[in-house]
Each structure stands twice: as C-alpha cells, then as structure tokens.
Image 1: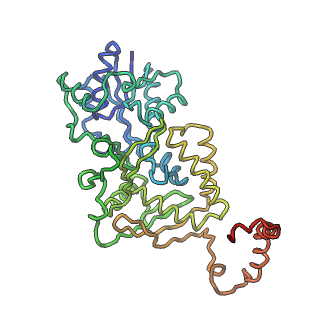
Image 2: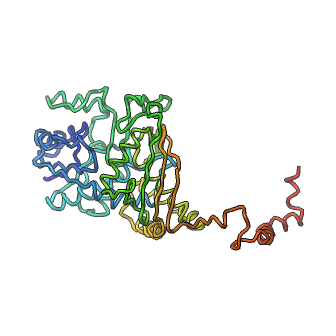
Image 3: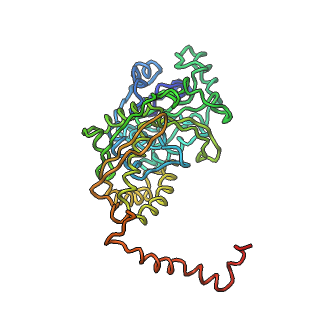
Length: 403
C-alpha cells in the first residue's frame, strides 16, 4: 500500500507516520509538505520525515500560486468570516489538497492521509477538494479512528517509542502559518474568559501597546483589484506580502481574537494574526468605495457573504464559487488606483485614495450649486420616494407612531 501524507513535521504528523506503519501493514509513506509560506518550519523536513519512516519527501513551493490564484481572488471579493476572520487557514487548504492529489496521482498512491482532527474544519476542506478532484483516492484521517484523544497523549506516544518529540506540553499551541496569517489555538485560549498574553503568543508582530509611538504610512496601487505596486515600486506577490506583514506586524495591525462557529456545529476560540492581509483588505476596500456604483456595492455585499461561507467550508472547487468569482472579477474591472493608509498602534486609518475611474465628483458633492445638480430636483424625488408613506398616513395607518 502507498500513502501520501500531508506532512508538516509538527506533532500530529510526527505521530501519524509510525501510527500508519503500525496499523496499515507497514505501507510506503510519501510525505508531502506544501510550502504556502511556513518559513523556517520547512527547514530540515526531509531528514525528519525519512527518519520517522517516510520513503521520500515532496517539498513543493507554491507561494506564488497561493497568492495569485487564491489570496488575490479572495481579496477582490473582500471575504471575511463572521466579520472578523480573514480566512488564513481556509484559503490555503484547497491548494494544499490539490497538490496532495497531484502527488498521489503521480505516485499512483492508494490513499491520502491528513492530520486534521474530527472536530475541526480542515478535515472538511481537505476531503471536499479530494472528492472534487480525485474521488477514487481513499482518505485516511487518523484522528477519527485512533485511540489517541489529546496532544498530551501524542507526546506520550512518541516518547514511549523513543521517537523525537517536536515540542513540549507548554509549547503545544495548535498553530497554522502561511504567507497570509498565523493562527493560535489551544491551552489557555480554550477558555474565552482568558485574555491572551500577546507578548508570549504573537509571532508576526507586536501588540498595539508595544507598537511605535509614530505612525507609518503605506501606499498600495491596484490594477483591476490586484495589487501591483507598494510605495510606488513594482513588487512581486511574495515580496508584497512579506513587506506588508513586516510593516503591519511592527505596528500591531491585524490581531483578531474570535469565538467562531465551526462547520461541524461547535464554537471554537482562536487568535489570528493577519497583519499584511488586514492592510491589503483596507486598501482595496477604500478603492472600491471610490470606483463602484451604489447598486454594485450593495449586491457585492450579498455575494461576499455566500462566497465567504463557501470558502470557510472548503467549497472552493465548486460551480457556485466559480460563478460568484466571475461576478466579483467583473466588478473589479474599474478598481484601479492607489490607496494610502496610516498605521498606528493597531489601527488602519485611511489617508487618501485616487483612481482614474473614480465616480466621485467634487462638483456634485460640493455644497455649491453646480450645473450637474439642481437642488429643486430633490423636492420631486422626495415626493415620489415618500409616496407609500404618505398613502399609509392618509389611510390612518401611521397613527400608532404618534402615541
């Protein structure tokens, strides 16, 4: 039997390799790490995976693809789960699962194995993608079948077999990192009443109170909803995210503490750091305010809600997501211009926006009467707009409001 394992080198996957060996008649295990921006977490993975029993390791750098084909479409939509979470884990899972499928097909593997728990969202995201792209491949999800019930028991499992333990009990926050964000769950965070100790917890930046006393300014130029320049200079997608993460982290930007509703029905508490992503969202939104008309803006909010729901629940490779993306992409044809932001102690403050496609007219908006707008026209508009209210009043149906 040949199994492709989604491998990170962390606690779960370090346990899964020996567990698969013991429970699946010593199969060949092909470890596969998809680099979406984990940084130093990928260092030494090949030696570690082979030492734990894998036959080989695929380490695939997909950072550029991740930003261009997944993050940028999400930014154009403005997806935000429960009005706070910028979907850092959610957006990476379809790409990771897609690459696992590609490796499994190349290697003619019998199964794909992942380390997502039976309580979490990731099992759904991974497996929906596998079903969409290669339904014939079997899925193995150890957390749904083994007798291990906690991270503490995982540590004991490795210790009993004399295998290296990648972390201590005190360090065993559950974390997920990529170019877009890092999430933190577990330990003291499992009680929503506990205030997070940001000085101990944060990885990408500092808490707002530890940020500099002087603000930082950043200018982002977009073409059709896609960022192309940072402070007037052309940058690659990876360079853009690295610089925005550094700038945002320094200024305490993008920290989110959320008790969210998981796909499986329970609530969970997590702390998310999305410094660069928060800046990018704010800059893009400011430009949309300038470039989109009223009706498109309003309907895009409706689309955003459903798009976010699909993304959160792992329904990326679906006809509906494709259709919604087509609508979003159409709205972005005029979203070209430059947004300037001020960053100060966790706050993102608009500092100017301009576009060749701006729908803002100073002549119309000014209090000074101009040729394009007659104040007298407002009277007829109000009479027609308020006609239903007037009819109700004439029929005596509005009297209760005067009591």
